[in-house]
Amino acid sequence: MVKPHTKNIPISPEIRIGGKDIIFIAGPCAIESYRQARDIAMAMRKAGLHIMRGGAFKPRTSPHTFQGLGKEGLEILRQVADEFGLLVITEALSVEHLPLVMEYADIIQIGSRNMQHFPLLWAVGETEKPVMLKRGFMSTVEEWLLAAKHITTRGNPNIILCERGIRTASDAGSNTLDVNAIALLKETCPYPVIADPSHGTGRSDLVLPAAKAALAAGADGLMVEFHPHPPQALSDKEQAVALEVLPQFVEEMRALAGVLGREIV
Ligand code: PEP
Ligand code: MN
Image 1: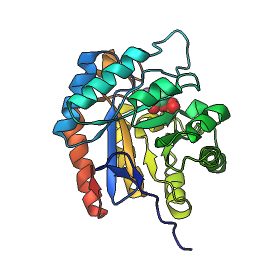
Image 2 (image 1 turned 90 degrees about the vertical axis):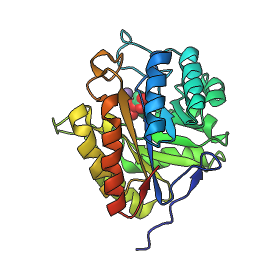
Image 3 (image 1 turned 45 degrees about the horizontal axis):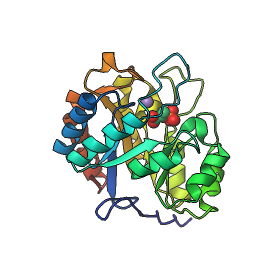
């Protein structure tokens, strides 16, 4: 079977997702403060990375936990990203938030819980912004691709898929990163595929090996959660990789990318 050519999605004049380069997106689960976000942006810049993540509107399972800083979180993320010359990806949680998030983000993230939130898919489909569609943690690959179709049929072709782990019988983490799906999508579908080994494992000690497995399976990028002080993180602290480890983490990924004939940016 002939493999489809992966679409090369422009994020900025210099940065594209889906080419030979592997995009390493890093950042906190949630933007918590200017200081926290700035420390991460600075470390990313030093490591030669280009796209910063960070939630401002958080889809939390419990209503009693930190829900994100909202508009203030978007402002902080954009400010520190601009200071260090980074691009921004952040989640639009609802149709109502989309216009605001569009003002701050270079890529719109649709979260796992919203993969089949059709009005939101239609709304991002009517924009031209790149959209990163996360896989529903109980969704099949087929359902995921149909969700992507809901976006493209409204006119927006700039889709990036993100495998973020699914629920399985495995107890080796809170989710199971579906490496099979990454390999399958690279065989059958034209969208770039990013792997999220943070939510895909739920455990900081498994993030690096899972990231390696994802690259080996053909992922076009990674999205990894870092925090300057993981035990104090306001969300997803069990999976946050310590910021001090970021340079080493990126180095290990660069070495593996080299073996695969690709480069990390
Ligand atoms: C996230 O990436 O911040 C997030 C909430 O992930 P997911 O939607 O995959 O749970
Ligand atoms: Mn998170």
